[in-house]
Image 1: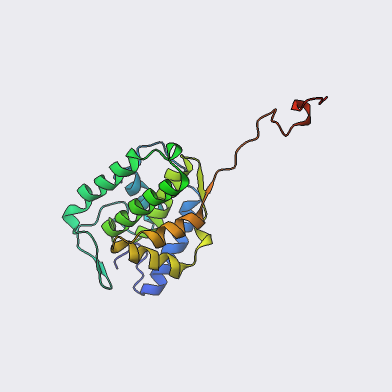
Image 2: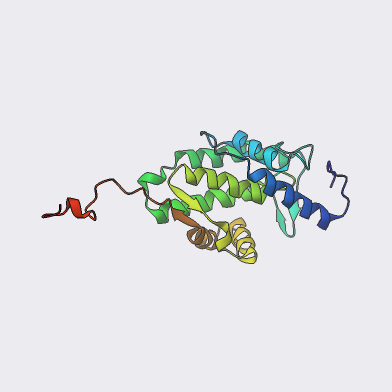
Length: 195
C-alpha cells in the first residue's frame, strides 16, 4: 500500500504503522463530544498521519477481508452516521452495565463492518470507544483480551452475533475508580461515638 515511508513490504509497513501509532497515542487527548464520524476521522489522522497521506479520510474504494465484505464506500458516511446517532442516544449513566456493554458491542460491531478507512480501523475504533467510555465513567484495558479472541468476536459481529464481543468488552471495561468523599461512613469520625 502506498505510504509516506516508501515501505513496500507488508510486514515492515505493519510494524512501522504500529510504532507510529503508539507514539501518536501518547499525544492524543480526549476531546469534547460529539462523538461522530469527524471525531473518528481526527483520531485516524492523528494516529496514522505520519504514515499515510489519506489518514483521516473516509475510503473511496470497496474493501473485503477474507469472506467479509465491508460497507460499500458510497454508504460509509450515512451508515456511520446511524451508528454515531445510536451511540449518541445512549445514556450509559442511566443504564445497567450489561445494557451499556450490549449497546457498545452492537455499535462497535456495526462500525467495524462499516470499516471507514483503508487501514487502521481497529486501532482507531478502539481509541474512539475508549474516549467515549472514559467520558461516561469507564476505563478500558484492551490488554485483557487475546488477539485471536478479539478477531473472532469481531467476525461473529459481522453475522449480528454480538455475544462474543459483549464477553470481550465485559472483560476489558471497568468502572472508573471513585474518589472517596472527605467524610464517609468508613471514616471513624463519622461513626457514632467517633472522635
